[in-house]
Image (cartoon, rainbow over all chains, first blue to last red; front, side, top):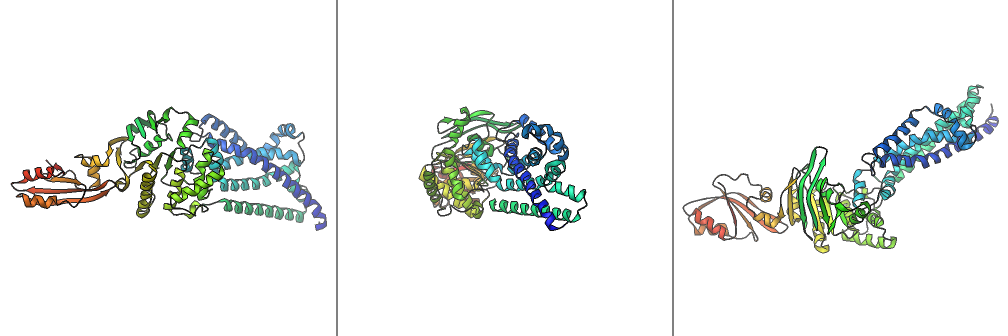
Length: 218
Length: 317
């Protein structure tokens, strides 16, 4: 296979991966961040203790985390059909990717928020700050470097998940590797795909690390 | 200004506060002295209800905090400043941002906030450091930021939770001097907890000595010093206790250059041996404590003379 033949395959596949991962990352952030906050706020020692609710949330998160992604992807096909109206194509796979990544990210959010010292939270309480203010102006800003690091790890994991989605008709680089590398023994294309994935992951990780470092004032 | 009655705090079977009554008068610096585990931190946190007491009431500036609901309590807390052992500054904000935080909580408009932050930083001697990050400051400077932040809401009361315990001795003195100045200039009532007698000696007008969840002795330092056998006096002056048999311990306040001892020796037929003693500078003035042995025929008359000269005379059995 020549470069002229490979480029028209690689470029759309890369875009599809970027779309799947990008949209899933956005939805994961929107859903996982509040879930992570809830896990901390409703904790026994949290701002608004509600141990039963916290246990229930934790249980749901653990279910999501314990299912292998490939199984989850298949298991929620009916749900995907309800949400997007189809179960194939890039858009359809944003649903399982999001469902798979939300619990993962929520736990990372929880960990990052727990790193915020109880002393600053209590200082804010002593100033008469409401719970909402404490979450918005103390917990989230103080945990921001950790949250960025967590998001980076989640995006990298999403790239891995998206390759699996490719095998079930989601398109993207994973799909390319299966169809050409596995089924047609196109070794060169396989190598190029691997290198491309490595470069993307490295760049994203470095970007995430850099942003987290910039935000940290410790 | 602060009145706590019958405070109890229990964690399961552990009793942290076992019926504490506390009365802090307006404009005074009240120190709660005790070792770690005595319950003083719990007591302080019960005053602004960071810990809700199991029983008892807390009144600050005439308002019964224990009767308030969440929103009302938050408004009341905006007028009770608090400073912390480890400063508790937000690393995500600049120095100015930290001082502005309580003003944001109170809903003060931006322009007003900026003006007030400038004033507060000047008040604590940090003018021009507003754009710095907390991690760029020394421990003493961090505590100054903490103090500026605590004063943002013009509080009538400042609570200090071991505010100098993480600082070196020289910095401790400068922070204590700042607290003393704020107390004098702003009429700020300060309730501080500490395990260091030095803090009590340097700034406090009154003291409560705490152990095992109770305040064992409390009152103005001037009064306690004059109370024979007070724990405060024994702990300030590190003379061996109990006093050896036959010894006499003299406590004198006011000008330490009163030649009472030489007068006694000249006027009476006694021999006087000094067993120990020192003079301590307290916030309210100097206090001396001298342990002597008086021998000779005139010893009882000499003691009577000492008593008559305004000294506190404690005779060991």
